[in-house]
Each structure stands twice: as structure tokens, then as C-alpha cells.
Image 1 (tube, rainbow, N blue to C red):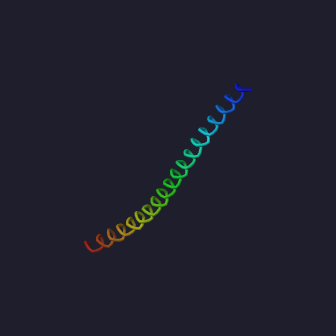
Image 2: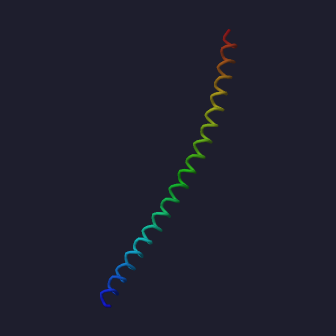
Image 3: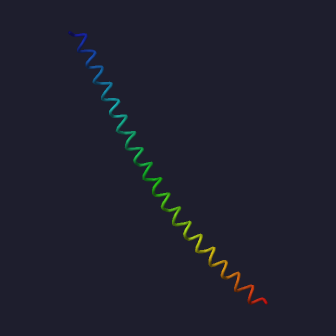
Length: 69
């Protein structure tokens, strides 16, 4: 019986450690996912701003070319 108790105690300790590691990994993964989503949103915003600047440069270039004629 004592031997079974030692095995059970060892199994409980292993299960507890595995659960703790799993919980920490899950939290870290959630933080990473949130960071990726934030970066993705910021990249989309910067891309929109870049497209607007491209359009402004194209208009300014066209006006400059007309003014130089």
C-alpha cells in the first residue's frame, strides 16, 4: 500500500506540474496572439496612409509637370 501511495503522490505532482506549465504556455500564447493582431492592425493602417501619400505625390507630380510646361 505504501508503494501505491508513493506512485499516486508522484503522479499528482507530475500532473500538477504539467497543468502549471500548460497554463503558463496558454497565457504566453494568448499574449503573442494579441501582439500579432495589434501589429497586423497597425500595418493595415500604415498601408492605408502610404496609399494616400502615393496618391498625393502623383497629383502633385502631375500639377508640377503641368506648371513647368
